[in-house]
Image (cartoon, rainbow over all chains, first blue to last red; front, top):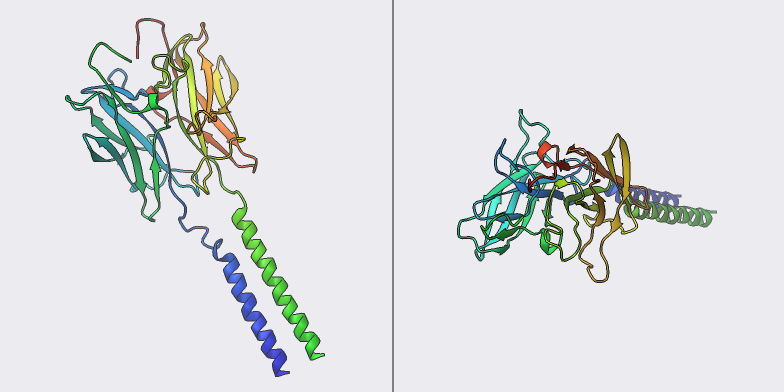
Length: 167
Length: 166
């Protein structure tokens, strides 16, 4: 009888263990997991009311304001993550990497601007050509993500001469 | 009798274990969540043409609007399978015009891991904003949609044919 009890008790322990193991990956439905997914574009950041402001663009002249607009999306909800997430543009310029922190754009006046922004004025002495960049993100749960523009040369951030409009 | 009971109990434990383990594996392999779409608009003049593939949202009549959208699997962070169906839904002339997208990557350009669609602005198009969305559905039944940022100046916009306005 004692042996039966031992076997039965052992069986219960094993089943309990398997149950715990089986649901270990599902239980934390509210846990923030996965990698952030970043999406966005580049646009002129000439300032509100100025012609061409916020129009999409990737070809800039010296002195032009490059604008990045990036949304960090929670893979579990499909919505943007909390505004305190840290996004940074990493610009490969002048032989070094220049980090430009982004800021959450939405405010009381423009609550629909649910993305992060950063701006960079093309230096007066910038050489012409492509400037590579990436954007990284990290939220308070430790999740990270990265954005790169599509791998198409003509779509990269490009500096052109100051001659009459080349765009 | 006792031996029989022991065997039955042991068998039950093993069967239960396998069942739970397989349930767990099945749950892990199941494709869940919504697809996340990202992308932009660009001129689609064709390879080698000036301005081809440069970002743009302001077009004149006769110009080629190009959409480049990537459907991302939320579980992997990578693009969904190329057989995923993406469609641009254009609100134009009081109707919704559906433009199916196609997977752009080819043997020659394997890095172009996104979907594309093209629309030539009609010669009689009125000036102003043309709203659109993009939807996606993969073979697992997952869906997703894309809208441009809610900024008026960034919408797909048709302008008059005067001297370059962009």
